[in-house]
Image (cartoon, rainbow, N blue to C red; front, side, top):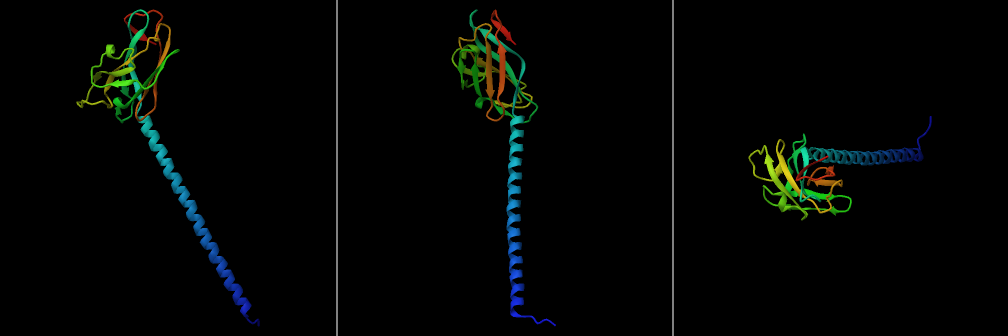
Length: 196
């Protein structure tokens, strides 16, 4: 029969301490892994929510884009109708940033003209844009483009908007993707021109 000595008991105590240390280290490691997983999940949810908000707040052009000529040399302003796409988020058009570009001119951040029924004459060649008309208004006299509503906008053009020029107008809502309207001015101008 083997006799148990103090050294044998001490070895058992060491083994217990090592076992407890491994359990503690494993618990800390699993906590770190779980925390990283929760953080990643939260970030993924934020990305999905942001992308849904961006996608649901975009614009579309309804109908044609018209260019109104100052004379036979160049266009003075654009007129077009925009609507909300299938998303349910209203767009505040007064906070929208509009920019213009052609082969020789770039206008960024055109000024918004406050008020309804802005005429093309008040915005042409002066780096301005405004709200001309509203359709299917749901009864709220504001600048929110709600689903189902349509707003007709007028955008002033520089003297470089000449025949055969390719022009680009960018509409950037406060929330949502940039909507680009790219058109070519016809070679011969009349007072009202449909741009393609």
